[in-house]
Image (cartoon, rainbow, N blue to C red; front, side):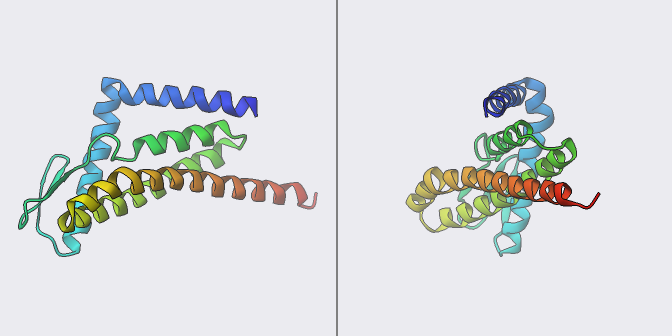
Length: 168
């Protein structure tokens, strides 16, 4: 357990430092946030809204309501925690890599749902938007990271259990 905690914190701190470095911002954070903005714009337009996209800002053409997908809204912090937990957990590197890839994809899919729902909530009621943005979705994203990690652990022990019981 001490190994897991130590490795988790070392990995987490290293990833947060890398995220904050200028090249981490330029080559990871900005492209990921811009891509997330465009995916969310695509989904919102599919749902019938006419948008203007400027960088990381989505603006509804008819109402003028806008959301900005800024730091803390792009899911990177949740992904860092998930990656640190998976790297620290004793599993094969192949299984860890698959978990990281699918875990990040799962977190970003939920993040798209989060941003799209907050956009429509903001069109309807600004107080409800603020409450859902600050309290509901922040907790859900972190809980999703925990849930993905727990599912990943379960399948890791299940697959290792099969290997342990396989005929020789």
